[in-house]
Length: 337
Image 1: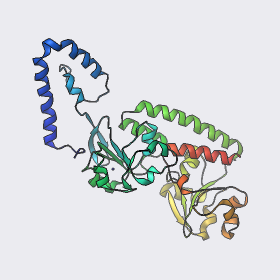
Image 2: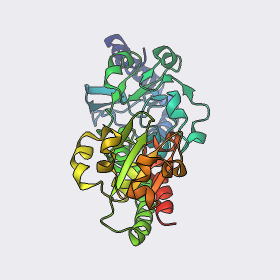
Image 3: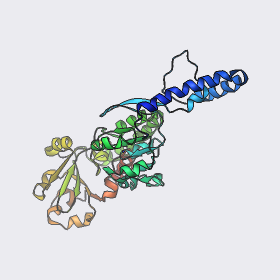
Image 4: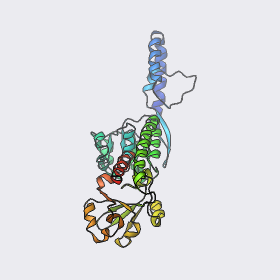
């Protein structure tokens, strides 16, 4: 979501190696002191979290050894590389890319994300989203696995150090980018990306606020043919752009239910109760014009007034920070056209 979990024998070898290196360096110190000092200077420029006693001089070769840090997760404290090089990411791909980190593997569904598909050329498919193939992951020799599936931890953690961040624990782009910036030692990159994100979101929101009444209500829906779903502000389909970025609200009668549970399956009989003044609809088969000719839908004020926006799941499903930013600007353009 083996290298991952180092056993006690590996730890012993890591501790023994520096001792051998120290003896070697001491034996050759007279003839190589200048070279050793120059190399050590280069080594010190590398960011590291390994803490050594102040009086201990690190031999040059020690810098090439693996370095790890302990992080607190839902599965307890886990030791991970301070600078992972081969990440397999089942979830949170957008945040990794925003931080300039390209994984070596990810599930097929996330590789199809239209908002950053080009950045994933060469990334290996690790299987079905939510059920990644352990065999496929092993061949990639990952040094860190990131997943949102708690039930996969036992399997994945046998392959490499595994960080589980359950879906919904990180509530918005700021929480997500900040978390992974800290995890990967890319705090500066996270801060810079979020600064631009905030500026662009502010521009989009200002555009919408100029033309859409503050009390206009919005509904986030998905039409599956036999079923209709309504979503909150952290479940994809446009919820983050509408409710978080643009600051809009669902109909008051269903607001508490939707924001608490984040989704509801509804019937056509209750459709009017959940329909706001504006509807952002996910449908893979119908268009806005189709809804105008359907009795139950055409009776809704949002459809009558042309306030229905329809997009396919390939655009609405994704909810990473990169997707949310693009979706927000897309919806702002529609609302202000």
